[in-house]
Length: 438
Image 1: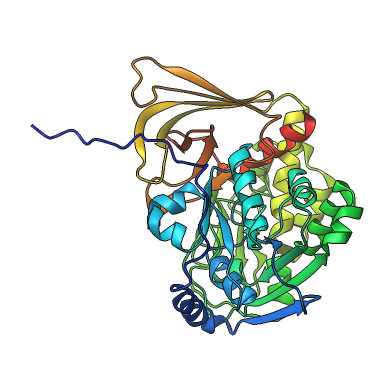
Image 2: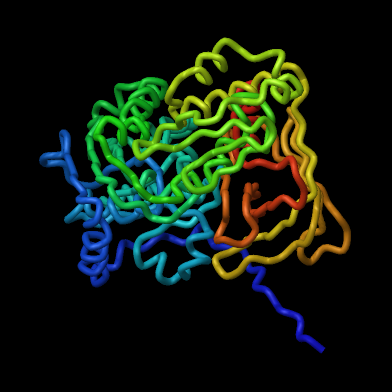
């Protein structure tokens, strides 16, 4: 008889004071980061940083894992603490993650213990690095930041520094992590506000400054710098963020393979050129276009984008967002999907929770399942008001494909679809808009 696997259910200790980065580790960390960024010929620019000493807060753009190699080099010779989600602790080990200065938390929850630990870092004259977007960029563009970002800056009352990295996404986009060559890495570290200026600014003014300094568009950066990516599968997986056909409107019919993005419904095909633009190479089947969901109600914006010789990928992405917003405003949005659920209560292990149902409505998410240790099904509710966004994955650890996560104070639930109609990008668009409406 096969022995049943046992799991550690001990909750993660979020109150534990984070150690400073291990001084013995630092030469190895800097050396490894230097080696790993050489292929991109990393350039680091520093603005208003002369004479600045800790404590201060660093807010960074979040493109890819490369972010964690560049940030230590930009902050050299200073050590720092980093806010990290628990999945990193589980993947690499809690001891190691704490030695490199990580503070554990769960994404998109109100974590008072995290705030207290950040304050402790500031009191001991440290540097705290936070990536407020809380997930990698879907199509290489910046996300809207939560209001709480400016509130944290105001609460800490220390200098505000931003780190805006370019090229990280282009090297390894979240929808196909295979590293591409030909991408140059460029980073700017800026002291945006002194401690005195933080005190004099309102939260709104601080948030506006943060958004300005953390704005980016990776495909514009690629085109403006004539960086040619010749990777033969550069469009493979692009159908995950670009899930809706911009020609016929059909959802979940896109296929990204090789250098081409195609619609299985109307037959339209786009070629992703070496400069990151989409060029239509096959015209849409007009008969099939008429039968598509939105064929008779295409917006002027859709026509304008679709008729361009070259389509800017972020334009397509934002068009999809507009379609979700339209669906919500017309009262037609709702998701109900059978899902597979894994729980992450700590830095030790994921715990399988079997199958369940994920429902998303205007009021929020309903996750119905049998949690580990429970004999009966339960339904967890996550309100739209509490979620300014949702964490998304396209092929999480190459296991089950697309994924979204929902967290309580003591658990993070990784949710994978078991049937059609689930797309992480669409769920993200809906979550963000429903939060604004609330």
